[in-house]
Image (cartoon, rainbow, N blue to C red; front, side, top):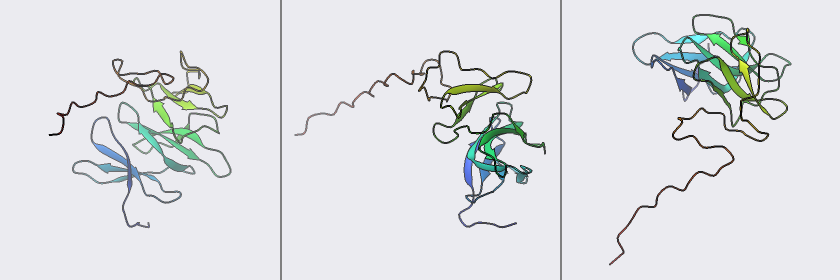
Length: 171
């Protein structure tokens, strides 16, 4: 296995705080799990899927969702358990994983992503559920990160300006 100067790009810390999800800054680099305490690093074998620089943990810390593609196919999202599971596609091909990226719902049941038709959609992480548009989403809405209810802002409304510090006048 090759090693690269400069190390790995950290993508996310697991919700339980035990792992850092990372990957080498090189094409076709696998996702890696780096322990935050004692332990050995792990490689998530993507088995025919080339991961991209977009990945997030499931809320239970037992798996990740990542953007990737198979040879001669477009980008899509996959889910993979950290205990050696094979990756499973959870979106159709052609999703947009660059900014604004994607977001996993707090309950871990859906992933929100911009589809090939440039509209937001919720895709189930478990195959027993159907995809659907997010409630209240309108064409052009691109905010995909869940927010705390007290700090959430609708993506079409400007955020209020932060308060300006009060400085005494110069002498």
